Image 1 (cartoon, rainbow, N blue to C red):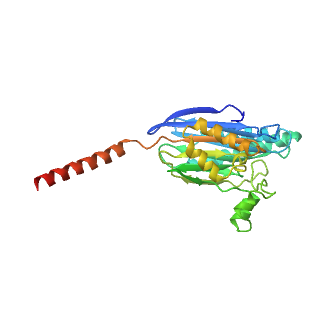
Image 2: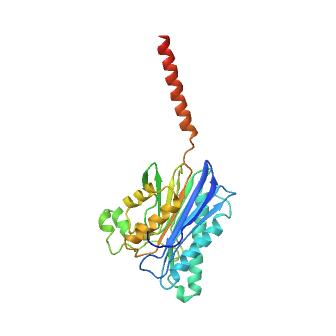
Image 3: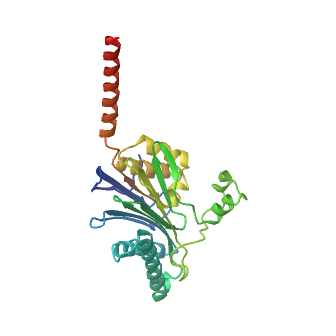
Length: 286
């Protein structure tokens, strides 16, 4: 495998077992600065875990600062205040947007900096939530099937949804990096927030477009199904993007929920065994 940044790993106690976590970011093969950032924050008192990936935009070190600010503000705000998770996510992302704008106004060298963001708030006691701005993505692997949970806020993705451009042509379109929404662009920000049902055995992947822009969903699916260990998977994903050219920063963050408990399976097997035994006795009596 190619050489890349060390993969971070961790785990937290979760209903039914252990929530396994791994994240990795790499500068890629072309860029000199890594403007991606990511973070995972466990809110034990709420029974929640927050996952964040941000992809910075802007010259010099602006993009790098914007993405780091976004992650830091999300960590601070998401655990504060009451309210539904969707409301807390919206408030936190709005606060991150204002922090980036304020920092850019104070320093001319940071003028124009911005960042995409995608967040997953997993709740072990209820419905989970996803929020995003821009073209960083959230995927879910469930029962061997890969689903894209978010829709890119980009020009090319909009043209594909409107039927103007095919998905195949979109991958080569020179406008594919033009995002229509980002934090740090204007005071009012449109945030997509949605609830989702997380189930035992789900694996979630948050990533910057440096990953999905270079390897397609079929390859992402293959890697997710080949590697069950999150740290190995994170390394394999980044290596695949580097092998495909690595022309952008690459970041992935993985959350793997505990597999379904074995007890329902054992109960089903026991029921079948009892039924078969009863059938044998009935036949013997006949």
